[in-house]
Amino acid sequence: MVRECDLRTASSAEIASLRDTLNAVLAADLPQDPPWQERSLREYLTEMMPGERRIAWVAEADPGEDGGVTTAGMANVLLLGSIGVLEVLVHPSARRSGVGRELVLTAARRVYQEGFQTIGVEAVGDTPSIAFFEALGFTKEYVETRSVLDLAGVDWAGLDKTAEGVSAGYHVQFHPGGLPDQLIDAYARAKAEARDVEDGELRPSSYDPQRLRDSLDCLHRRGMTPYIVLAVHEHTGEVAGLTEVVVPAQHPTRADQYDTIVVPDHRGYGIDRAIKARMLLELRSAEPQLTEVQTWNAQANEAMLKVNAELGYRPDREWCEYSVDVPELVHRLDAIH
Image 1 (cartoon, rainbow, N blue to C red):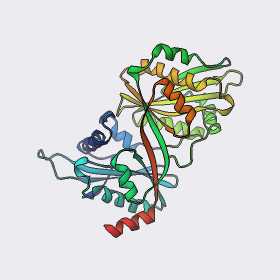
Image 2: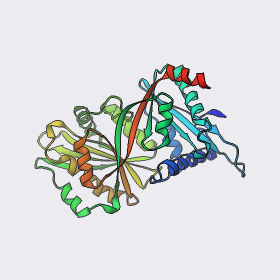
Image 3: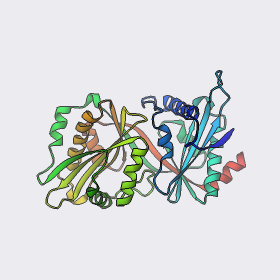
């Protein structure tokens, strides 16, 4: 049975069951990824940016021998802008039973009722999700490469030299937890000037100062600690480059690399390597439990892929973004339901 679930008021047992389903999926499809913890999981699922809404459903399995809550699958859709971003998880033991299709149909009907015309979804390469969404008529729009850095293999002495490799006329700053408010405008301006991410990406950056403030606040409410390293142009005081890493409470041994940007007028001065190296050095002290950092890059972004390779990142998986027309999806699934 698929039912809508208010994650804000769900019981602790229900949240724990969702975590167990997520970890079962990871163990089957991404066995090298760290399991998720229950800490701040509810906040991760329910805290959102202004103007965004998340709707969730669970597919309940038969109760276990102890009578506890068991989840065969879950789906949630984040409504933002003009698109609904869908996530579907089906417990490995419930696959090929129709649970996933039922969850997608339920979510698609709701997205249609909400007036949205497009659903987007991320699907990880070399996992069953690729064939699942393609069979439902989703079209691949964008591909990134995920790379993972094993901190145990980092050449820390070499990293020290790389961090000092920025040209004269710039100084590098480390900001744990966020940014001083006086830097927000310059930071957002740097992101806007370097906007080179394709429009279809489902993890948009924040180019507006207020949205950037909201984004940092949302990260904290979701149990995620941001770290930021800046390269500042000494003559103008402008932000010439930036890199962001977030350490989630839900999987605190593996951090997520967010944006790394160098403003076009300041490229060629060693900023990209220096700020990423400085970030790793700072994380070593600030988050001693960290063992890995993961990052995503467009396959066409050869310059950043080269920098990451020099730092020790190794390609791991393709990360694919798919989309589908909502009315067509509902019609197709209703026809086979």
